[in-house]
Length: 159
Image (cartoon, rainbow, N blue to C red; front, side, top):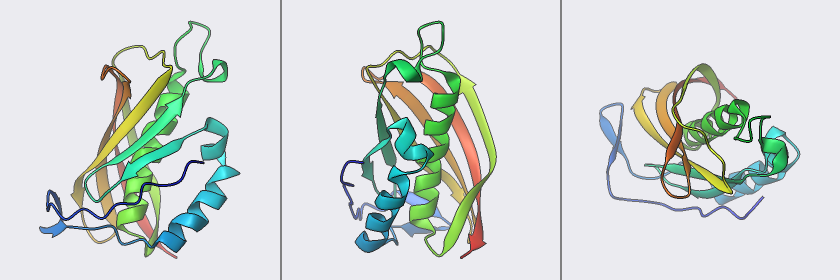
């Protein structure tokens, strides 16, 4: 997995619980542990790479290979679904590190075929409370074409 571009943003654009989220609450040490664990999981198998993560947006990229394609020659819907869930889940975990954030609902709309060679997800928080976050994300081609959109709700389980 590529090295995480760990950023602290202070532009006050993300609203959670009626107040502004101005920075991530996860340490570089916690990210290092995540990277090590992720490499041997489904995340690593897919080939996901973190481009950036801030309190406002998480961006993940994937270099599309033959094993990501379906028999029609486009990116398999399961790959897009996993990218959406991963990008929104990563944002949820980064904003609520005191909890294990698990997906409780995932909705996906496939709006255009994706072919690569690189696709990216962009995830944002729509609403949050102490133990839940609702997020929105898009999977896009490098030229900006949106191939899939999704929303998800994540529930925090105490560690």
